[in-house]
Length: 288
Ligand SMILES: O=C(O)CCC(=O)C(=O)O
Image (cartoon, rainbow, N blue to C red):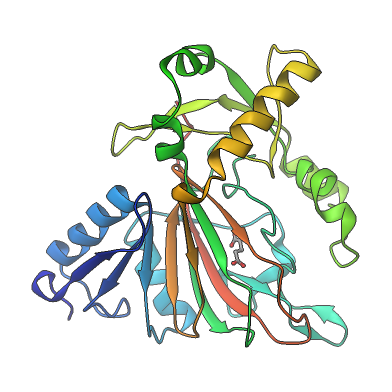
């Protein structure tokens, strides 16, 4: 049993991320301990736990404390024994990838292309390359806060279109190992519109809610206006002082708030070395 008194919280950078020690997430967490984690999650957007020895069921039951889970549209990459666990992996068996290969090698917020985007994602590292393969996280709440009042006024009330197939246009079309979505998969993820600035339902903070991976354009603007404004916002949010960069060790468990962050998996490792992760996704609400 992990309880509240043992939990230590250490911030990892000025605007985002905190490391939690004194908790084994496979334990039966007391309500008070869980409340401490939830508060840290809302305050810092990214939680890092080290040395977590978890099987898929334990990962699922920890994740469920935060809310109901959802399953990814790419069903073929579910864990064979537990469909709530999604495999992020470059491992191949009989020539075929066992998990989503090159997942998230571009800035994005998970499933922003759904009417109710994923609230949080939990990623557990099982095998990591000897060098590289870090994941970066950026705070979209801090990025919003730093905009001028005039820019905030311009953005207020705008809506943006998010589309999963945009990731193929901006990224996957350049790599050989991720086939396009099937017609059936496409039909499950039609483009959706969300407010460009959303209010975080738990903290009340305003957050920029567009991302390079899945945001196609800003509704009501011309193509060139939309490109220019998104280009500015994308560059703004990638400034180093908004970012925490996580260097993985096997056993790390990192969870992030997709309502308030983007992340990017850095593709600088030797693809012959195994990088194999388990992920769960906690369902979210429609942004407002
Ligand atoms: O592999 C990673 O580091 C992150 C993958 C990713 O983008 C995701 O799980 O959403």
